Image 1 (cartoon, rainbow, N blue to C red):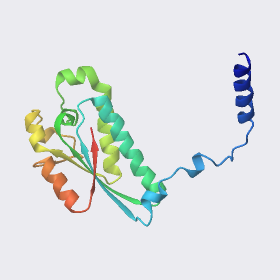
Image 2 (image 1 turned 90 degrees about the vertical axis):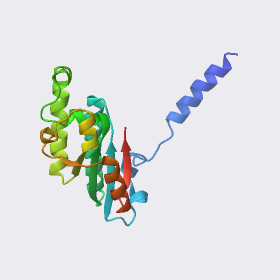
Image 3 (image 1 turned 45 degrees about the horizontal axis):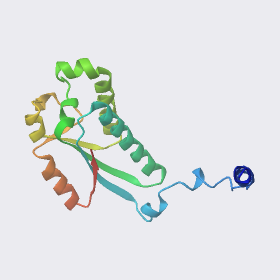
Length: 168
């Protein structure tokens, strides 16, 4: 009965001594297969997030995706279309309750939007959503273009060859 635990210990010690090539991980991690022969990556991101911290996280992830493509010698051609509950966090004058609860996060969202704009990422905000969420179109972050209908925009960009990337 005691042999089984000793055998397991001996086996785990033995396997820990087996050498693995040092390049067996980080050096091999890339997107070469997916990006083979690709010069430009066209993506339209449907951003529909009602949690400001989660929105900040995903804006940072999108910036990282942009940088990852550049590192792999592919030109990113990104468009973000903000709809739904994302909209109240993308204004220069958010609701007082939102500011009280999320002021630092709102500043991070505005900074991420500005960073994406500097990278050349087109960013649109849906006028249907601004109306539903009572956001004045004149008060949206200056990097955003107010468009008529986010769904129409998504349909149009997909017809132009942009890959849809849903972000919920």
